[in-house]
Image (tube, rainbow, N blue to C red; front, top):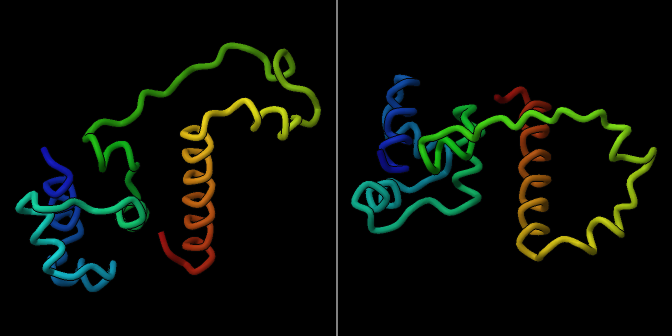
Length: 120
């Protein structure tokens, strides 16, 4: 199943029309048509908007699979001090890891904003 097909199934699950979906999320019907034809696909910000609107994970929206939960069997005290040294930790991250964390933080802030506004 493609990203478009997952989006289409979400639209149907909300019993809304594609036109309503486009209006609600600020997507042109032309863009939606391009996604359907495989001519283009939603950008990162639009995927975040769609996932937040339908309250689904980005993993599921992009791949059709949920990320498996990882069980940590250690006590936090074994690996964390009272206050983490953020400068030391961030200096050891790759640019890709930093970009991932930044995107996650932005997504988290976006979700908080939606909740404050009475959204999903």
